[in-house]
Length: 451
Image (cartoon, rainbow, N blue to C red; front, side):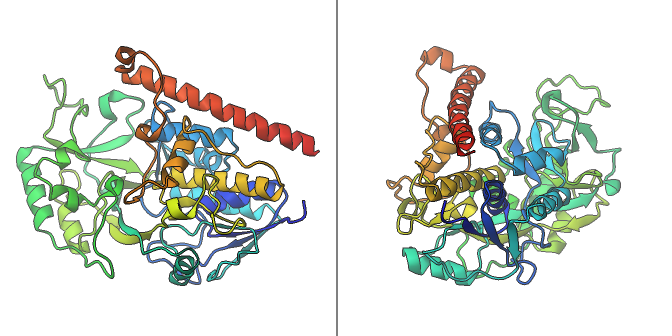
């Protein structure tokens, strides 16, 4: 191999995954990260792969889309999912992590490779002659964004993303709050704050009349999977009760009830945010309300009337490229063969999606530089379907997407049998993992031949 040097721009989830994969392959990596010299406005540290929004990487269940995506990436050699598992905190069937422990361990892993050089400066301009993976994420630096627009010729694309508040556990009133998981599945890992109809209507009135922080520069567009709670509430008084505050399957066993479906009018859930379990975030409570309004709203929730808020919610604009015009199915740019793009900048939405595309971009960068056939994942796999979606040239209006069963190739089976959702997902999951195992075998055999 002649060229053993690769630049990775951005040490977020996708960039860190890509850098670690290529470092293991023996490449000299220049990992560019502008933090802490220049912060994004949403990040608070200089650690790699800092989780800005939730601390949840989604489901661990391979019968769910996000869980299958994780399994695929782990089979293909993901470093970050391994680190996430070591830093997991109780969250039912979801993979949630101690966000700072997770980032610190990734930093240690990066530092363990002598062939990774971290460069703390803003990367402003693409060099088409240098093998580069751009993984600067949705909060990419303005000068680099302008350069990408000039090089690839596309209009501004963006949507708004929001962050949920975090409170101290010891400020929660457990005479009102209770521990439970929905339908008692797994451990009772969530703190639940129940509301009756009157309390919910009071909460709703505070929320819908609260003042919002102004949004600068952009017209408000939102990603459906991370929509501010105040925007959801504007769709109707019961929207939250069928969304993040749904009470179905949550029961306080201290209270006798004859209800079999739901015991309360609405429920606010809180999820563990760090390893020592003294911080909890409000699930689904992404918001852009002014801080004083957030405090008033949170403290109107039974059990949180004295809540100590350690981080308020906020909103930031996320940037993404027009991937169908710019990228091929290998996450390589069509214009410059040396340039690959991964992570949320491509239009995938979600932590797991960012990690997985970072891994795939690194795999294909290695194969490209080694003059091997690059990997085109089949759309029977979750990662393959995700990449197929973001690179499909037929989109009338390309928008960010996360992993979901709707993008995966349909399975041929008796339609009556497929009405059983669990059975259908089992077939889809087994088919995907079988395909991924084939790719793993190809990668392993070629690695062995190289030695």
